[in-house]
Length: 402
Ligand SMILES: NC(=O)c1ccc[n+]([C@@H]2O[C@H](COP(=O)([O-])OP(=O)(O)OC[C@H]3O[C@@H](n4cnc5c(N)ncnc54)[C@H](O)[C@@H]3O)[C@@H](O)[C@H]2O)c1
Ligand SMILES: [Fe+2]
Image (cartoon, rainbow, N blue to C red):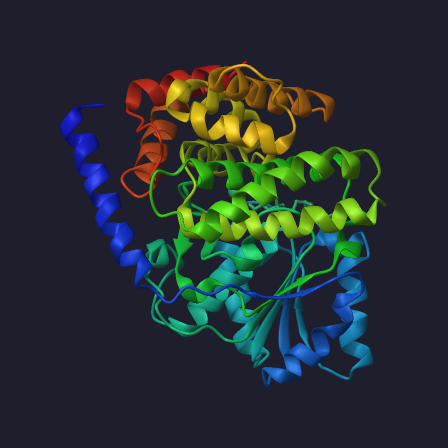
């Protein structure tokens, strides 16, 4: 990467940082603890929502998670409309269909039940409701919505994306398979109902992948050279600590409610950290796999994270050494030794949870497009510790491919 280009990106980030500090940041209000889904009717009433649109996916209907929440609404006598066909890596078509149902049913707010896919599809649809003359694709990028959304309650069932408190909604263009983010402060949900009981039935492989997504949020936010605040740094550190302490417990025993609860809070904190400080090259590359091959987002991050951290080299040793200590995986030595121990601990945790070292489905013909999309996503917005150019991005993708 040419020095002038890097200097331009760093200047952009420094100026953006000043602007970002003037924005009216907020968090989704946390309603938490086992059984907290019972409070959803009261939350809807407090926002004046007479009929919400419930957005979820077929897996959550089958697993009985969404039906339990619908039963709470039935019991409270709250009518609702239901959209229950969100697919992973949600598309523009899904967002349009949600918007159409919301209008046809005259709804007054959203209850999004699910992982990032359901929450993001509902967030993007809510953005369309307040921007009726826009296409979904036109809302991609930063601060393109700029209007208050209808009341929005997020009920995460993975831990996870953090979407319950982030500015982002990740949507895939149906025609081009380009996966992009709509990012606006108004997309931060009003309430985040963090009920760990809803994640008890999450299968081990999804527990693993979504937990590694949360870890990637915390680590990438922590490594940003600017945008961070004291709170985002603290949240990232606490999230890393909690994920190392609890993810494998929840993977081994899904019914470990204490571990599930800790992960849910960690995911929320990591979500806050990255919504404030940004993600980085890991996410930029992972999104291309989600768009092109429908790779589960957490799985893509889990595989790419240690490869990118290794590639960053000594630039990140100081911060990774600190994370190694917090995670309890540092065993003395220099900062470089501790940083390497942290990266190795991620590889080891991945292996113990059945996450592969790489993917065999990445095709040669797609790599130039992946590089273009990843670089356009990361630069200049993400304050990454190492700015990637085409060559370095390609080298990382080659290592992700086995
Ligand atoms: N908005 C953001 O800030 C943000 C951040 C990171 C990722 N994302 C996006 O979120 C999406 C990924 O979300 P995800 O990883 O949470 O997965 P997901 O929402 O795609 O769900 C994955 C699968 O898990 C199942 N599932 C979810 N909860 C379950 C439960 N409790 N019990 C049984 N099955 C359950 C679902 O039915 C689905 O089949 C991606 O599109 C990603 O890009 C968004
Ligand atoms: Fe993510």
